[in-house]
Every structure is written in C-alpha cells, then in structure tokens.
Image (cartoon, rainbow, N blue to C red; front, side, top):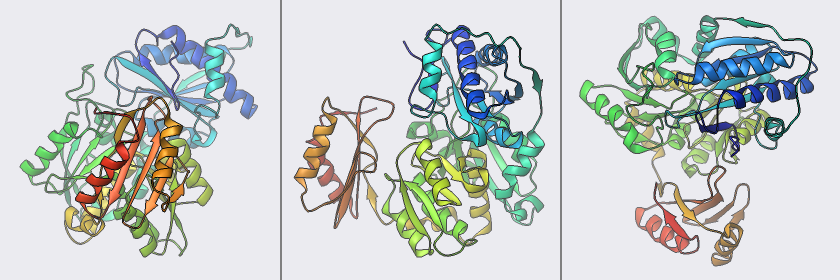
Length: 456
C-alpha cells in the first residue's frame, strides 16, 4: 500500500508508514531537490508533536544525509515554519513530518522545494514515490552534514509583519479564545503571541505532549469547534480561533459564538489588504467560495481571481497574479509576503488586528458579507463522475459553464460547483443562492444526478 497522496505523504504508523519508508522518502526527496538545484543542500527539516514524529524524522534525516545532502533541523515546529525556514535559510527545499488533521495514529511528510514551492503529484512527488518503492540504491559516497538551528525569533519577526503595532504596544486590546487542538499551535501560539501587551488569550487544548487529541484536530468539522464557541461566550471574548493539527489552517468564531465561514473571512479581510495596494490588485479565492468574496474584492477596486481547490493551485495563482492575499474554504489563508504560501499564524495575526483595530464587533464587521445562503459541501459516491458532470450541464442549458475545477454552472439566481475530490473517490457539490429555500430546491435537483449521498 502506498503512503503517497495527491499533495503529500500520509498514512497509518507503523504500517504502512514506518522508519524504513521514512528513510527512503528522505533519500528520494534529497535526490529530487539536489537534481533540481544542482546543490547538496541544505534541506530544512521539522516535525510535529505526534509520538512517532521524532523517530520518523530521524530516519528521514538519515536518508537525506546518506545520499549526500545537508540537513538543517529546525525542531518541533508548525508546518508554515518550515516554509519560512526554507526561504530564510535559502534552502533547496524542506520537509515537515506531520499528518496534519489526521488522528494520532497517522503520520506523514509535507515536502516543498526551493522558495517553499510545493511538491505534489505531477510536481515531483511521483518521482519520490517511484524511488521509495523501486529498487534503486543510494551510493553517493559522501554523507551530508546536519545542524540544529533555533529560528523562533526570526519567525516571530516575520509573522508580526501582519500584526497591528497597536496590539504590540497595548494601545488596542483584544480577548481571544484559542483552541490549539492539542497540535502544533500549542507550541507556536505561546512562542509568538502569549506575551503581547494587547492580546489576552483563553487557551484551550494547548497540551501537545500527551500523544492524544481531546477532539480531532480538524476545525472544518463543526463538532470540533464547540469548545471554542463555548469559551468565547463564557469568557466574553471578542473572537475565537481553532487551529488544525499542524497549525497551517484555522477557523474563526465571532463574539456570539457563531462560526464564520472561511470565504466570509476572505471577503472581510480582502479590502484591508487592497487598501494598501494600487487599483486592479488581485485577491485569490477558491472557486467554492461565496459570491460575497468577488463582490467584496470588486467593491474595493481589486480583481477577484478564482483558483482551483488545493494549495498547489492557490499558491500558483497567488504568484501568477502577485496577489497580496488569498483564502481557501478549507481554512488555508495565503500571503504574498509569506512567499505566496499559507500561514495559520499570519491568519491569526490578521484576524486579531482586524477585530481590534476596526470599528464594530466581529459579527458587525462580517455582517455586510452575509448576503447569500450556501449549502456547504455535500459528498456523493459515483462511478461515472464525468458522466454526472455532463448530465448537470445538459440539465441547465441556459447556465454559464466553467470547467476550472470540475463543473461550475451559474444561473441568474444561483450557482453550483461539482468536482471530483482530490483525496477521496467522491463527487463534491456546493450550491449558493439568495435564499435557503432556493438552495434546498437546487440541491435536491442536482443531487438526483450525482449518485449516493454520503454524510461524513
């Protein structure tokens, strides 16, 4: 069984992912990065808090060094830290040992090349996979070096370019409930944000050395946000934030305890980025997002740019359009001054700054963008995905059709997108209209063409 997915490596530990496979992944990754760069390194390496991460990262580093590449180990860090380290150190690439939001018995690796550009299927990951499961041997003859470095001070300075100075000085104040999900935010948030004069935090699930999760570290599941919602209301917080396991994603809760969709967060933050740009500057968003995002960007004299779903495509669109900011429905937020990469820490800084330093509560600030009703993502099992999408097009001949990612059909009062999952054998449906009644009606119509509905 392969441990390779569309964007990264992720599997159960110790079978099928173990130290032997980790070492082979280190070797294959180093070979790819050295071939691309013509250099022997360095390769930045970090790991998360899972109990098997230390042994897996040791095996990974052994493999990297055995083929002649140099390693710089940045230690126990969140995933965006590794992207920062790659750029800060002018490394030829980086690897984070993590399984992100998966349960504790999973682990994996997220790999990037120079300038933190992603390595996914079609972008080099398949070459690493072929090496791992092939019979090619190493044999560079020269073992690479290894050193450990502490980059937290530099990382803090980098992240704080997105934190309003009024919070740093205490001129403005904010109270935030923060759920670290027993993941890497439990390390990152204290190191960066705990001693800021203007920020008071109610810390939830910050313990990350026990080898267990109080709830799954996936903030996209509403049930996993309950502790954040309750803490916001109980402690009278201005905002709540829940991070995923490796702290590259986060979800936002307003002062009333209501979950704010990531597309609405993008719509709300976009004008604040565009305020500092010339007219015609782009903001990137994933195509499942509410029309409120495009409306917000256009009203702020920006250009809304749709992207395919997935960090590979979002980063590509960010770089292509030199966009200062981008948002994805999954909780990834992207920043031009972060090498077009995503950052949970920077998103946190932006949310704190926007709530504290602009007029009105979080819910009042977001209210202008809640002008549409959405279905949320609905999954279907279907053996003929392309046939189902063609049937959708045929069923609405007056619709405007777009095939950026799956099929998007837009009509005067509603739109829908149907796309094949990148990670599961499913079709995913999103519908948006002005009213809940129409959303329910259109979901019913479209669902009839898509197969067996799967609720999970």
